Structure formats: structure tokens, C-alpha cells
Length: 476
Image 1 (cartoon, one colour):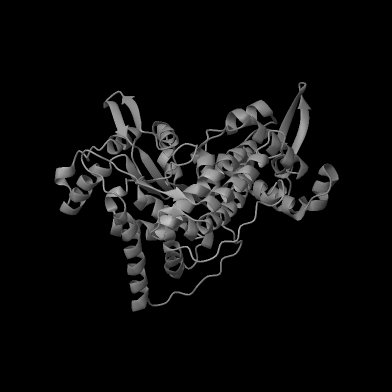
Image 2 (cartoon, rainbow, N blue to C red):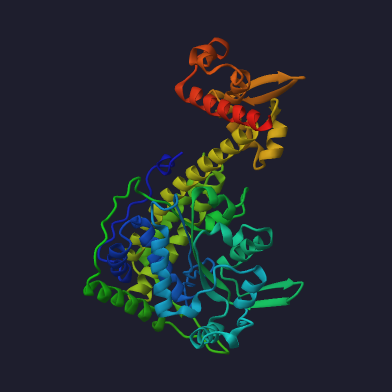
């Protein structure tokens, strides 16, 4: 079910004027990442602002938990076509030019991540190049306030020993006063004022590695960014002009100004600047938050995973509005800031629906491939239990995929010893016909026994017949 199927339209907003630094970023980044979807470029620009703000601004005048504008952002799109890596490299260069000490390595164990957030330097700091040594020392002042850029993000948490990183992400998202964990080797590690901004990129298939089966709450804490365009036109490469570099320097200068306008941490203190919100902006926020609340009704048809996303979109909007104000050098969120933030959040809301559909479809496609691969190698039909044991994953997905394969004519269902069994139809046909002479193996001959045969099914049977014949020759 798409994003427009729930409760009518969101409350209307009509922001006027520009968006400060974000507009400058969009002009520059679109000229450099010419084949990256605009929604991705916009989200990365906001992540850059969140990174350099680094928990040093807070909205705390409302009767709700304090709001710090850190962001968790993930770009989900098929590999290569949408050039996710391009915009990630630009973002990494921006942080490197303004505050490289805020970036943590993307690949690390949970123990090392906690140690870095606790202000510990790398154990080989003395042997590192002088510039990197300085980054390690500068990072100690910010300690628990860091950022991570993760391309192929499933590799960050895809191993059993890396899985606890998800728990760290979950806990740090809400910016607690401190976080404490104890490890076998490192003992107890305490992190003060922890805060992370994450920028990850992955494909629909691999996104299920980051967002585990079941509701961990991690999905709902991310700005889920999927392409709005089905087709990206290739833009011919050209020589870079001098003013392109000048535009980049201007954007870096603006980002550096945001970084420097906020209190700098010292060895003994970590101060924050207070951000306020105008009355008209607060009213617009409440209208939107109220509308989102209605969409989350337990009696509604909203998917549980998306219900968490809807429930946090209001808070996410406040973070975005704060970043827009700070990017324009202001300490008060205006009605225009909120209006622009709500427009952005509505794009992200629809994007989360696309991501959910892509993830379900990708899981089904992967499960379909796994089932076909398994059944192709089976000498006899298999039960659901046998198939699920071999394929793994969610049994409901396995059962759903088997029914889809049956409806598509690729799986034959039979009763064996009182149990329903499944066999890959092209392989069943191929085993019967592979000993025949080629001239008799026609769609007509197959259809006499198995019913109507499509061209695709016949081609698959022929492919398997060739494999069986080659295997027999090798055996002889």
C-alpha cells in the first residue's frame, strides 16, 4: 500500500524564501553528482549539517524530550544505476575539509567503536602520519559525538560479532547523557554525551541485513531515502571549469561557518547552544504531528514497521527544521523552516513506503532463487519444512514464494505420504525427457503430459536437459 493511501493529505504548508546553506549545497552537489537522484543529494546535505553541528545545538523549550539534530540516513537503491557512491564521496570530502576528526572509520568492532566514543585514541596513534595523529587528538574533544559514512552498509553489521553495533546505534540515536557497556577484554567503557550521525548506502536486497527480521526499531530511526525517479538519464562527462571549484569552496566555507558558530568542547565541558521555535512554527508542527498520530491508529492498515516511521516523522521534522535554521545562521526555527522541513519529511515518508515494498520484493526474489536452486538439485519432491530448513529466512516468506511459483507454473505440488510436497517443474520434465532423442523433445511432446508449455518454460527445460546430459557423460 503506497504512501497516499492513508488518512488523506497531510496538513498543507507553503514555505517561502530559500533554505540557506542547503540551497547552495544543492546547486553545487547536483553539478558534481549529475546522475544521483535529487532526494539523495538533499538528504546528504542535511546529514552534513547534522554532522558539523555535532550535538552542540538543542531544542529544549518544549514539554518533550530535548531535540538534538543528529540524523540517521540510509540511501537504498539498486547498485550502480543511481550512483550512491558518488554523493557519499562528495560528503566525505566535505567533512574532511571542515572537521575530519568527527568521522569514525566505517569498519570497526563494537568494542573499538565504544572505545572511540569514550575518547580513546587508536592504539597505533604514534606510528600514524602527523596529520592523522592530529585528527585523533582533535577527536578526543568531541569523543562521543561522531559520524559514520558506510558504503555497502550491510558489511558494517553483517557478521555475528558485529551485530552489537546495531544496539549501539539504537541507544545513541536518542542522545542520552551517558552510555555504559562492559566488555570481556576492555572492561567497562563509559561514553559521555554520545551522539551519532550515520550516512549509509545499500541495495534493497542487502538492506534486510541492516534492518533485521522483526521490529528492532532501527528502521524507524532512519531517514529512508529511495529514488523518486525510475529513470536517470546519463549526463555526458565534461571538463571541470574554474568556477566549479569556486562553488565547492563556497559550500565548504558555509559548512565551516556553521561548525565554528557553535560552542567548541573543552577537556572539561561540552556546551550546547539553545535553539528556539517560533509560535507559528510550533503550531504547524503540532498540526503535522497530530495528523501523523492519526495515521498510526492500531485499527488502521499501516504496516507495523512503517507505523514506527510515521511515529517519529514529527521529531525528524524538528531536527530538519533546526538544521535549516542553523545552516542560515539563525537560532530560532521559523514557520518557513518548518514548512520546508515538512515538505522534506513528506518526501521521506513516501520514500519509506517505496523502501518497504522494495525490501519485501527483494526478499521474495532472493527466496525464489534459493528455492529454485535447491529444488533443482533434489532427486524427489520436498516438503515445506525441508525447503525452509535448507533455504532459511522467514517461513512465511518461503510459503508465500512457493505459492507464487506454483501459480506461475514453475512448481508442481503433490501429496506424498500424506504431506504436501513441491518439485521444480522444469527439472521434473527434464529428468523425464533428457534421455530422449533431441528430435522428439518438442513443446508438443511435453504438453501431452504436462499441459500447455510456454516458450520460457520450454527454454528452461532445454537448459536443464543439457545439464543432465552433460552430467551423464561426465559420469560415464
